[in-house]
Length: 288
Image (cartoon, rainbow, N blue to C red; front, side, top):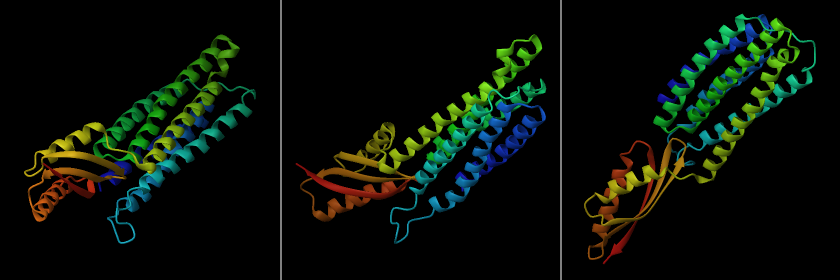
């Protein structure tokens, strides 16, 4: 399964990054890097969560679920967003509570770790977003967007660590709070992304239409079929990895019912050859 293969790669990268961030965060005394490691831990948990759920979401239709199990993907995306929201709350809360505690300056080596993390996570996020678009998978796209927040948060860590190091070296006290301040900014940024994932999942559960360019492509391909005089109406609703299609076609009013039925069957077969269309309803309108 292509979706699972993508998420397994993400799982491997996130495991390495979680270990790197949290271990070096404690080793080099960086609050922001530890916070960023907790953020990456949410990535890791989401990858495991998604891999388990994908097996169910991609199951074929059955008697109880004639349209398949694709909407489970939206539930997974929503739960992913909620879990990220909880992590972000705890992150901000802990940093704020401990903000004025005795300051510790991160090691200069932290900067090199952060540069490695930024490059690794940027490559991963672009890969997930690219594959998510190619596979039309909302849950992989959600993971890609969440991974991109890791890139931004790691850049914020970089700025915070540099500020703390400079503040300690040159005796500028307010700069020494840079590491803690970076932790708060990261938490707020994660909250924003989590809310976007949740809102997008809710919209999809309510019935999200296909993109206009896909609708136009499907319409033109149907109108090119013999016997179809035009497409009067077309709806394509996202259903996880697949679409449910409801289409009204115009046929010659002088043909027989059987001939009209044959045209409708041809349209249905044509649409179901598309790998991401699972269910098709065709309505025939006579045209004088």
